[in-house]
Image 1 (cartoon, rainbow, N blue to C red):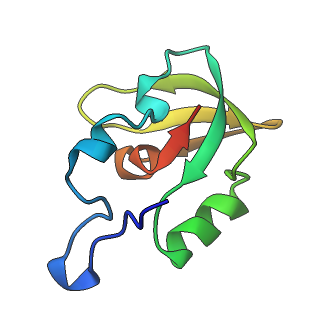
Image 2: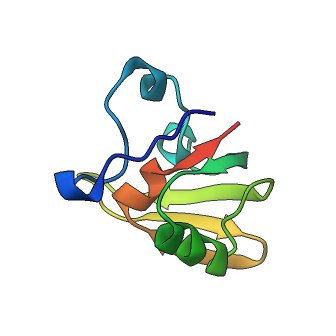
Length: 96
């Protein structure tokens, strides 16, 4: 798989802007109450470590509990825990 990271020097959030990324399905594509399986977590090592510490890792089933308008937090259920994640974090969690 191609590296999706964009250089730190560019002050960017992590994604390259190309057609490949437009086909990725993220937590934003899941409706409230629906369950999905995590396919990939995209980001630098610090981000991936943080996601894993929250239980967000490849192969895990998540349920979208709720989301807020205007890029507010998204609440997901991972195992028995409910966590709120930001818009940018949600964009880096790819689902099947």
